Length: 250
Image (tube, rainbow, N blue to C red; front, top):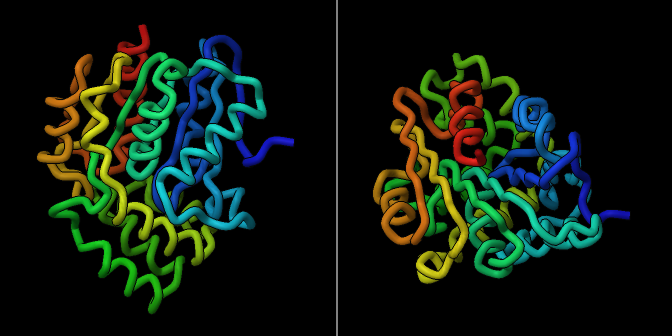
């Protein structure tokens, strides 16, 4: 039995999709449908989130990376294309640093190399305090609205809330701790795989200096900046998002 629940569709080279904070594999439904025509798409739920809400959450990015790698090992997968969003992008950077020969290509989406996220819409400590006071459902409504250019009026907002509310409070709190203590900057220059960085120009979580650090530090890197979108641009401009990745993957 695999170590994490996951969604899987298609055949061909393996494409792994890693969700972020208060996310889940269900957020990738358009991407799974789009890419399963060419790829064997695997989208896990991280411990404590989505369909894995009954599992204990990890308090380190390395622990989450280990959980994803454990699933891939269980499935007998040796090489894969890797896409990570937000906190999932930190996890993807960790996996790429730990297993550079396994990651054929890397997509870092709405993310950065420093977990403390300078200039985030609010400090992580504030998120921690408000999560403790308000609970998960209220937290995803409040934070999720910052992930979309149109806020809670955006078409993708109900899906974000539905997925995020499934997380356990323990996992949500542990993930904030994991992000606050993670710094992947030293590993960037050693990542050998072709990499695509995607960023919405109105992202309130990961500001331009974080994205610029990825762009200027990874040796073989392309940058796509998408205007008029925020942190969850895969829900705001899904066709453009998928076409950018399709072009990169060739």
